Amino acid sequence: MTREATRALGFCLVFVVPALLPVAEMMRRSGVPSVLAAAFPLFFLFVLVPLADALMGRDVRNPPGDDDATDASDWLFRGLTWLAVPAWLGLLGWALGVLANAPLGPGAKAVWLLSLGITGGVVAINTAHELIHKSGRFEPALGGVLLASVVYAGFKVEHLRGHHVHVSTPQDASSARLGESLYRFLPKALLSNALNAWRLEAARLRRLGLPAWHWRNELLGWYALSLLFAGAAFVFYGVAGLAGFLVQGAIAGVTLEIINYVEHYGLERRQVCPGQYERVDHRHSWNSSYRLTNWLLFQLQRHSDHHAHARRRYHRLRHHPDSPQLPAGYATMFLLALVPPLWRRTIDPRVHAWRARSAP
Image (tube, rainbow, N blue to C red; front, top):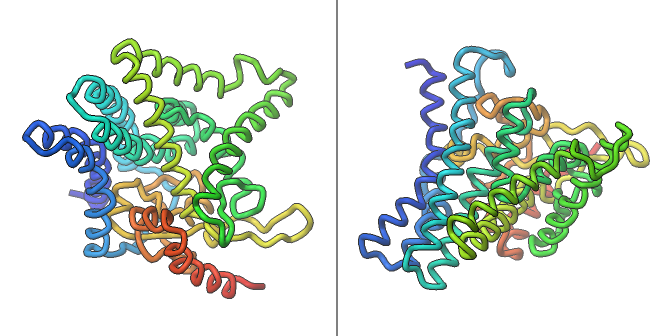
């Protein structure tokens, strides 16, 4: 087996995440209390994964050869992201059926939806993030389908044309300021990014001499697909299915923005003249090279290199030792962000140290 094929086996662990809900349902059917069974994916992601990260440690090795070369093994890594699309859509339909038909109490239903929404953030939005950055039409379209399935299509426009342009500046709603709590950041990010996506797409159409409400407005197409998904949930599973579809999408969107908070908190690009900032590079995003979480997230944690080379495929992303480094993987940092005093005690000293090192 080649080294690249061996690496691909690690990224196959991505598919452990959508398997967690079926395992939870099997636990419920075997007699485990419904609430505890529904919480199994949360226990796995936020207890077992951080423990395993600590045991397995970091992987700071970089892929050999040309960073952006294309060879036969690339299709293996691409295929994994493509397979995530039917895996997620199948899981979503099945999980809404369980929600509507299984004998779950209100508490178990709430926990089931929380588990489903966070799974959507990991499998649907994270995979979409990888796909929408690629050239051509096929992969960005797959990413759009995934985002429509969690009612977060604006991310496809705003992330590429807004966030990647303005990251680590005051113009970016997804870059948290030093001292800004998660609970102040979240409403601003969710609302501003949705509105900015529409503004960006309307501006693109204006340059073409077209009105915002035009069939070439891609947001209208993706929101129409979200309506189609919602209609299917209602037809097959009634009001419970429709409500579940909307709630899981909201939770997935919140999950994404919590990760955005972690990825850019406190980092700033220097202003070189009024309204202009230094070029984005690998020093303007937090990096984490914990091995297991990177396998589970298509190396999203090598976010520093992603912002420096946005089209680079996940398996070719590099570790930069001079990037600001998180003390743990995303699962741990996600939980820390929920407790602002603990978050600031952990991260603020690192921000100050990074600013001191980066001072001109």
